[in-house]
Length: 437
Image 1 (cartoon, rainbow, N blue to C red):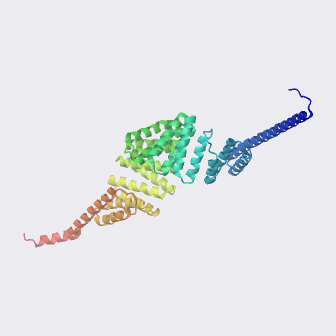
Image 2: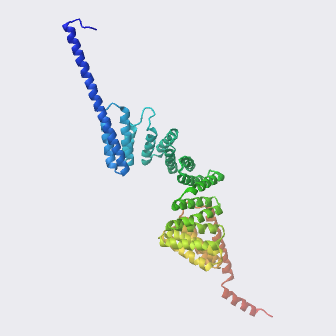
Image 3: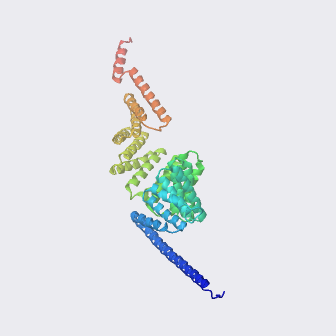
């Protein structure tokens, strides 16, 4: 519209134009300030993540603190939540879970955001560090579901492993096994067959612990673990897995399958003395169980010598005990006696009542076979006394020891009634002389 030439109207229009230009300048300045702040936040965030990668947690925390301080000056709530999340996650990684939890709580969005899966994972980690396994389990489960919905199979698998650990803390064996099976499936999707095989190996172990899983299901899980382990190239990793699967098979009383696993593991762990000693010990024990005592002797001796050189007295004692059992079964009582004495001393050195009662039982068995019931009674009584110091011992073990003690006492009483061998011979001779022909 054209001006009517009024001085008052012209002055008003000029004043309005000045105000408009001033407002535009303020908006431009504010925009520039916000742009500079966002650039600074991005730079601080990148520096913080780089510091975490190098393990410099102090520097990382300082960067994330400065980023959050800068973000609070802006009106962008989403940016503030992101900065609070980074700082909270850094505190959790730095071993300060409570501080981390405080900042992570500030970062929770009102609606689903891109970082919500990571947020749930970090919340779970913080609660786990604080010992709250219930909350940790809940957040890990949510994180796993969100990672799955995002198609991030690798993150989902890692989260399922963490979830399984929480279940184990609560002794929820079946739930832990289920989480590990989910993890194995996700690892398989991303081609990580090593992690998948290990997850299934652990799942089978915990299925056994639960006592509620069908044997066929456990065997299936363990078999799948062995199939996936075919792609493992690291000898130590593969050897350890085979040994653990062998132990699970032995608990299922599948001794031939267990023996095969131990034999396959043996050459793979040859360069690791401690691991080699364990596999040798397991091979000896499994041959004992299979009744193959001659084969077992070599493994027992090698394992005992290796454990001794490593200073593993307790394990060495168990090997000597196993060796004594094999000698007894072969009728080699002198060698068995010596082995059980070595076992007894090793268990005394390590204050191991569980091993001691087994050694005493073995010594009592030898004395009973040697027709020395008096000493057998002493050893069986010692075994029962030591058994009382052990926890979670089967009642059948106590019944067996009581039965053996009763047998030794009966044999001792019978010999006392007969008298010593020399005295009996003299009495019989004198008696014969008194009898008329």
